[in-house]
Image (cartoon, rainbow, N blue to C red):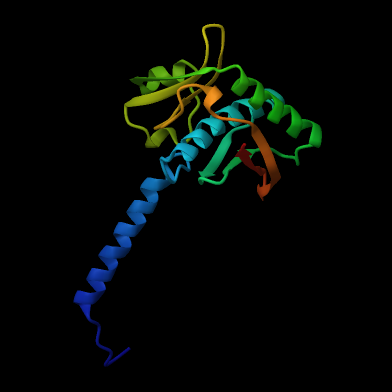
Length: 185
């Protein structure tokens, strides 16, 4: 409006603060939903990899991770799925995750070229956000690999460190996306 004065110095200062907050939020977005690196968050982070793998086994290979959020109290995992999970499907997923936990599978980390990681079957979200050299975490043993994903970590060294996996809630997140909230006991 005419006659209105704008403090451009203050505006520039506030705009720079806003840009910095946005940049920090954007960087956090691609850390696998891992808000902290405490012992419990690390356990939940590894559990999200097992949950993702179990959902693919039980529901089919068309299931893909759409997001996750991890706090010291629980994990939240969003995935593509066109239906509410039945009680039987939830139990099968839970049982499979707990079977892998009880088998004491090793969690291994290796660096490789992004193209080689994809060719090796490693899963990933936001492939364009990864550098040319990536970190790949594999969960398994000499006989089988149950999970293999591009990931920044951190993770436990063995699934036996996780405890009992329990699905607390399964709900719609958005159209075609379901959400599981789970805990480790």
